[in-house]
Image (tube, rainbow, N blue to C red; front, side, top):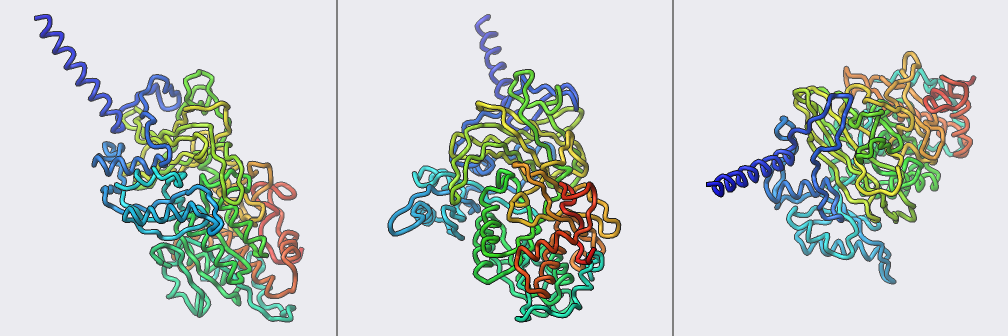
Length: 564
């Protein structure tokens, strides 16, 4: 009889244990004290057992497809697009830097051949990077190849969201009628490098020149990409520099951008307007693959005018702190979850990086050995629930980054993030960005909130001011860079009118940036000055706002072409 009860007890205990593990894997309850006093010491967390050569975000997609399970946030009404094992998924292969006498990037060529052998399709390549589409079921096999260093999802650029009111505000109107002082009478060549140009054709000959040059570096060749962002930027450039020849060029991944920049250089472009930002794509000190594009353009005499970003209220950074020795970072004295409010029907993503970027040598990255992980929670029924995690390995060949996204929130509530030390020999400097919040995050740190490549020393980085009042827009990202330089370099009008956005005015450093690009075009058209002389003119005529001199909010001041 006792044996029978003992057997029942063992069976019941086993079932309860299995159920608990199942619930945790589905994102169920992780109880905490309350919203602002969080202790995660005894909480169950997902194990870190996946292939270190595969990015964790990609690994989760493979796992969900392979065992046909729902993503962990499903029980909260959260959504993520499902895939099957035979779906071709877009990935980036970072091949090993193998050089041969016949081929500069032999490792990439070997990786390309393996993609084809596995039934995949190569979309494009750049140096050691191979962008391709491959069935989910074959990615694990691909990772076994010795010439494959790492497999990840593509980095995705973020768009940093009539006659523009900025034309009169900056004095560009008075310059447009000036007599030419250039003997060649050459119109400037300005490229708007962006994610999409939906509706541009209907604006030709009116809001845009009657003829523009277009090229898409997207794998699908779609110049429109269902995005009006680039078209609105082009409108402002044309308003500021109406005689300029415009190139509308779009891309969708980091590899495609590298190819686009090389092509623009070959076309003799003189100015690039770039209202795009990236997270987790560089050290914040002007180094990394995206910043290398900026440096390359500048070395060819091109003005690279880039947006500072709109992340000042969505940014936190600080040194890892663990006073209670439980491996969870403390944002406050006892708070281990940083929270932020997300409205309903919003995409949510979180980016984490830290100061272990190693060195860059012609795109060759040495790798991180400080391993930290990222966890995402949702607040429901007065409790925190684990929704997702990012558990990438950092063991010498991976980047010091973690990323979770993109989740689609169907109801308004708090979300939270936590950071855990997995295996590290020092307390690193952490940096966190969130996407989707409608108010400043808890423990918000606006300083250092620049997106990549706004930190590049070769970028003319632009912050945002209100077109009517010159007040600083609180969302506008600001410096200093992680190596202590002042950014942005200048600020320009935002909240302006465009046909592309209609009754919704165009806000953000995205709108400010093409004002500066267009102003440079107008100056270059009128006077035979060098790069340095034109840039100097731009700086000394700016209207100094905020504290005297160049600062990390306004730069040298608000764009103005009028004499002081």
